[in-house]
Length: 118
Image (cartoon, rainbow, N blue to C red):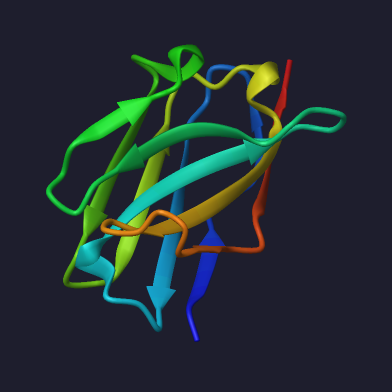
């Protein structure tokens, strides 16, 4: 049974930073593309960033230059470093694991709230 557990969310002022972590279990971590998504109230869930098992990354245009994603395959953990946060970054952030050879096989965490005050 796959399980993804996020942590690191909270309340921060605009311009501040947060680091989210997601620990995975029950999956072969290095064979999964790991992603961070977010969902703001009244909006659809959107991709923030993702990283393949080999370390290739891509980001939403809205976070390029401010956010970075990394993974530690030895710790089954993916990180999202968020700098220069803006009020529009306020959302629930979800961790996602997607099997590299079959994207239909995926798992989700329960999410962690990030609130950025102006």
